[in-house]
Amino acid sequence: MSDDEALENGVVDVDEYDDVWVFIEEHDGDVMPVSWELLSEAKGLADELGDDLVALTIGEELDDVAEEALERGADRVLVADDPVFEPYRADPYGEQFRAMVEERKPSIVLIGGTHTGRDFAGRVAVPAHAGLTADVTELGVDDDGLLEARRPAFGGDVLATILCEEHRPQMATIRPGVFEAAEPEDEADGEVVEADVVVEEADCISEVVEREVGDTADITEADRIVAVGHGIDGDLEPALELAEALDAELAASRAAVDEGWVDGARQVGQTGKTVRPELYVAVGISGAVQHLEGMNKSETVVAINNDPNAPIFEHADYGIVADLFEACPALADRVEAEPQEVVQ
Amino acid sequence: MTWTIAVGVKQVPDAAEVGIDPDTGRLDRASAPAVMNGPDREALEAAFRIRDQVDGEVIAMSMGPPNAVSVLEEAVAMGCDDAVLVSDRAFGGSDTWPTSLTLARTAEALEADVVVCGEETTDSSTGQVPPGIAAHNGWAQLTYAEEVDARPEEDRLVARRDVEGGHEVVAADLPVVVAAAYGEFEPRPAPLHRKIYGENDFEPTVWDAEELEIEDEVGLEVSPTSVGGMETVDPVERKSEVVDEVDDLADSIEEVIV
Ligand SMILES: Cc1cc2nc3c(=O)[nH]c(=O)nc-3n(C[C@H](O)[C@H](O)[C@H](O)COP(=O)(O)OP(=O)(O)OC[C@H]3O[C@@H](n4cnc5c(N)ncnc54)[C@H](O)[C@@H]3O)c2cc1C
Ligand SMILES: Cc1cc2nc3c(=O)[nH]c(=O)nc-3n(C[C@H](O)[C@H](O)[C@H](O)COP(=O)(O)OP(=O)(O)OC[C@H]3O[C@@H](n4cnc5c(N)ncnc54)[C@H](O)[C@@H]3O)c2cc1C
Image (cartoon, rainbow over all chains, first blue to last red; front, side):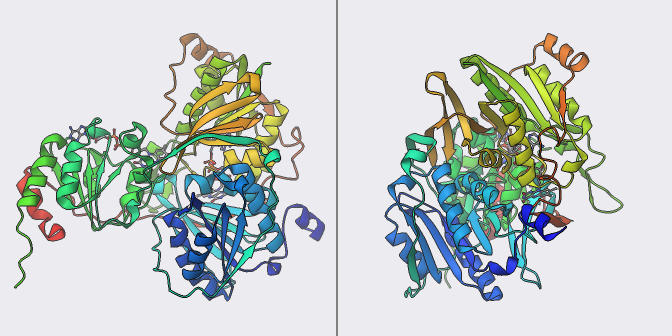
């Protein structure tokens, strides 16, 4: 490739790009937990590369969010604060983010793989001709300082390493729940930088007519989980009884979420969250690959299913072939009757 | 006004048939039969629902090798009015950047008002192609759409979107790219006469990169990402002890729960 051809293909001088950016996703002042997970993980990357760690946030009235990002280790926070950004829309977000990337030239940009992150990331990567790796579950850098982003493909049967050698920034969306967020430090000694807002309402091509957001439960931190699947047939009661007895958080398969029985914030799997509890009880869940991908990091897995051939039994430590409507309450009773640990 | 609704359908290896080669321990994708990406059936259904509301035409488009014709025949059998295969050796090694460029130019050439895609594919499942198409063309987008509502009098499409912790209703100006939320659009059965037509008589239009004037903007060279390696993931070891009595189960998990 000649230099001219290379430039036409979007190839850039990679040495002009540095710093590790993390997008801090907030809606109405609430930050998505994955953003803090990324900030913790990116601190290690930035240290390894000798780069600054920069948090970027877009929205309205972001002082508290910016402050917390500094407390959580960002060297700098870039803020684009304007009513045009609340509530979230892909077109103004993408436009603003792209302008910031093109002006400031970060080397790495990490975005939480939420519906929001996956919605706008392409609107940055496409015009910037950046590499965008999807659904990353492992991050590292090679000897040359190149980002190695690993992601599951083919329903989780394969872990592929994706590289972005000649384009910048190296962008990636990261699956929620795979990294752990560190606690904030007390002092915040970085700086807050206000970015120029490049978007105007008159240029927007979409409009949010209605927005209803309620359950934003974070199941990724739970120590115990009772997850329900299509087998519950719309009746959450037995699972809730078991969850209460075990002091566990409720989660669900996509099938149960799609039926509207459980909110999407509680979905486990490829298009939901990755969880890592000590105990994961799968109730009326068949064990599809896309579900297993989100629960494989659990320590002990228990399956309750009335089909002895359900694949979930192969992916569980303990299983019972039983009707969930009988087994859940019975197990709940047994757990509650359990004598508490005797202190000697 | 008549709406032209283009639908992206991708040929993928049948997920149920992808196995591990016992000799090499590697994933054996080559021998798996090629089928239509499951979520794209739902994209077709979403497109038909839009066509039910407006005067419109649904055209399936697929970027892929010549044998991807079979997924287009299936799309026509399911109810598409027409289909385009975009096929060229030059596309080899394309990541989502040139893939979405190709589909963006195809949609433009079709003078599409709406592009409908699936939420993501079952092979590389990036979900990046629909926003990529919108970004290349500077169009609006409605991803994770659970319901679609055409407003021809306003030149807008309204969708109920699934967002973290709830829902929102968003109105977007045409042209717009929709990604149909998987599990929300149960495909209607294909009428028999369409099936016969799709399989026996239908021939899709075939375009190459030159036709779309993108021969220098596709393939490995312009793709910012590359696959550096692939490892087969070993299944997590589990005890797989199955019991019949709740008491036995409770005993087994006693250590974890006290
Ligand atoms: C692109 C894509 C992404 C996806 N992402 C996800 C994801 O993130 N998460 C996810 O979970 N899925 C995901 N899926 C869907 C996945 O393929 C499965 O369809 C889904 O996980 C099935 O959910 P389920 O196990 O609850 O339902 P089913 O497969 O219907 O299983 C129900 C189970 O309940 C059992 N049962 C029924 N009645 C009883 C009873 N009375 N007592 C005990 N057991 C009973 C049955 O034996 C059966 O095993 C995705 C699919 C695609 C194509
Ligand atoms: C293991 C592996 C990992 C990869 N990871 C990345 C990555 O992280 N980033 C990256 O940029 N590229 C990646 N690629 C390349 C990428 O898979 C291809 O560009 C692919 O053709 C499009 O991506 P997708 O299948 O993920 O589409 P998605 O974005 O998941 O597809 C969504 C919808 O877009 C439509 N659509 C997608 N492709 C077509 C098509 N060919 N014809 C018609 N409609 C279509 C369909 O409606 C589909 O439901 C990867 C490839 C492999 C083999």
